[in-house]
Image 1 (cartoon, rainbow, N blue to C red):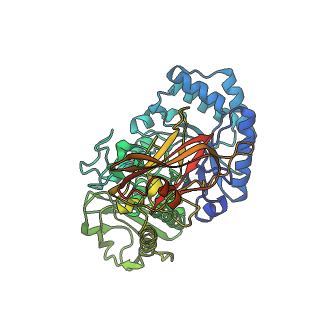
Image 2: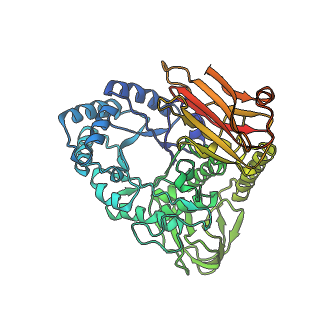
Image 3: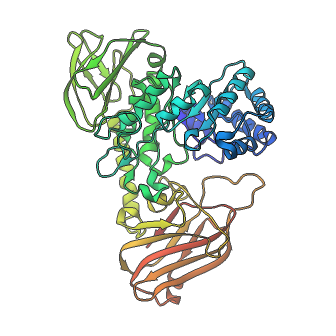
Length: 535
């Protein structure tokens, strides 16, 4: 179990030692050098770091020059001798590395019409070069894609993100490509993709959604991130259907959702406790008296593990579960309670998206209640810290921006410390003097005292790259009576925190009917913003 987007130290929010300690031992890395020489140099660094922390990574078996050629040619791309030369260099260099988990061949090729034949040819070539038989992985967002590209992989890693509707808690995507229940069940949106991989004779892994689509796409403003319980249900639902690996997308974005940053490692810890029965155990007969409750039971070295998942969106009280322990006591993992089967039968209650894991032998650990209390405490603390912050989304402020990346995370309050925002927004420049912007609209006009913009990116610049800075930036306010007013301007700024305050307001007459504030900047290279506050 692990994360996508694991990068060398300084480019990752958490260090690898912490990730490994949380159970993230199999992860994915998007690092790709421009040429094969640069690719090998970059990957060597990150694989060495992974191995030193008992972690293994999925990596690209080729460099960006090859990838760009195929991306350009798409469906017409053919496997060329130069492709074989590049892949051979990469595979031969790393096939004995202790930090290697497998070869990450292609990401969602059906969405870009990438040639299935090219993917098959690369797969066969990798298998001919890597005699150690590391798995080749293909990622698909659709069950159709799983079927189309299954011959180019050992492991299918579908990433069917349900995109949860705020209003109903259902998947936005309705029925999807394969039949799922009409209530928009999140679990039933995910599991047909696992079924398609297994039906195609492949190993199935699963990529759960650890982000909010609305953070990137204004067209997704009706959606939200999964709750902790919904995340747990989609993961265990995939496992019940046969998934044997979980790699969540992604380590960069999960920090914008504290409940997922806390909850995902907790689930990893749960799975670590029952890994042997799930991977090596003998399947046992088990079931429930409701079609929405899906059950998997496995036994290994005397430990019986039975997972029951409510795939529906409604509460299911008094569900009868039958499994292979005839009488006695079963311990419910992470719930600090027991059930007592009689002749193998017992009853239990299931909330919507509820998961219960029954064990024949007790395994101690943190409880679901403790995790949910921790999550609630953090969100309460964020609300309290932002009580006077007029830009805070929790106080009704609305944020817009010049482009989409990271936009929602800019006014959701700091999480942990002031210098680690919950996500970052990359300022872009199209050559115009105005560059890029972020804008806050208040629920009602009024006076302000200060605006503060934080540019404390958690990522270190790549060696040799220029220091992040703004060639020019402007703080502006919108007065109901006077329109837009330039509050403060500055040039060539690389400070981590930029502020406009009382003296700047005085210069524009201290308006008391400000409806919006805006920060505009022309970046030199990449410049990241991770929070805006207004008092």
